[in-house]
Amino acid sequence: MTKKTVQKKNNNTSLEKTKDIELSIQFSLDGFSFCVLNSVTKKNIHFKEYLFEETKETPEELLSKIELLFKNDSNLQLEYSSVTAIHQNDLSSLVPAKFFDKKSLSGYLNFNIKTLKTDFITFDDITNLDAKTVYVPYVNINNFLFQNFGEFNFKHHSTVLLEKLLTIDGSNEKRMYVNVYKNTFDIVILENKKLIFYNTFSYHTKEDFIYYILFTAEQCQLKTEEFKLFFMGKIDVKSDIYKIAYTYIKNIFFLKSKNLFFIDLKIANHTNYILLG
Image (cartoon, rainbow, N blue to C red; front, side, top):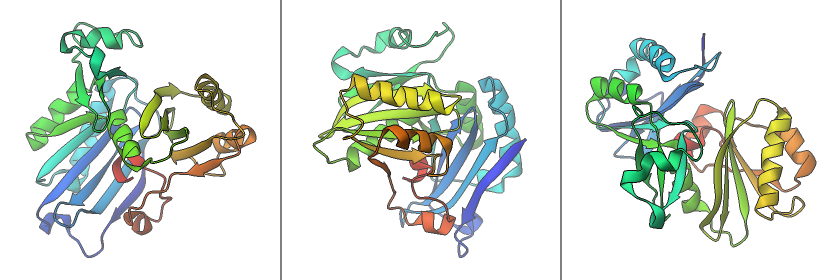
């Protein structure tokens, strides 16, 4: 089953009659979400999120679900001036530009995950960071999007996350940013607009969650009573993962987006950071 968690559009706007609209879609094995941007006003005018009751095991299962949802959602059948797909998975590796070689893409990933000879591996350039994101996109999803929209752009979710954080972070002190999803979360540590650490972790319990945060803090020489931790994504003050984090770390904040569209959505402005932050 699929749970439609958020659906909102500007009451004065009909997407079918609106020209110059851009579509951004974020895919994961847990679900997908999309937003529509008016390319003239640069304002979001529509957002929808679908969460699957059960995490899909394979990209093939994901595609089967995506095809059905696209068929039943009229806003995914419109013509867009541009389309961007964001692949959210842990099949990636961050590589400093000075060590990067296009001929060695699989080698970078083999340090963290097992790749197949048939896997399509690509990379993103990261704005404001002298590094590349090497990753495996959902190729079947890309093929499906090409059939529906023609030419489109795609990125890994970590590329988008890092670019946004590097743009807003101006602190000289080390800060930890944690972007939370249903079963995974990203940890980013920045200092003076420089990336100190990035990784994605899977978790099943609140103990898993806090273990990886505390372990990372220790490795990066962050004192739990001093450093600032900013949460984004699927977490709030009532959640068990927030409560256990606050037990060990006192300076916890939510990274609040300045996007006014969150007011229309009536949801917390630290959620859906990749698409709307």
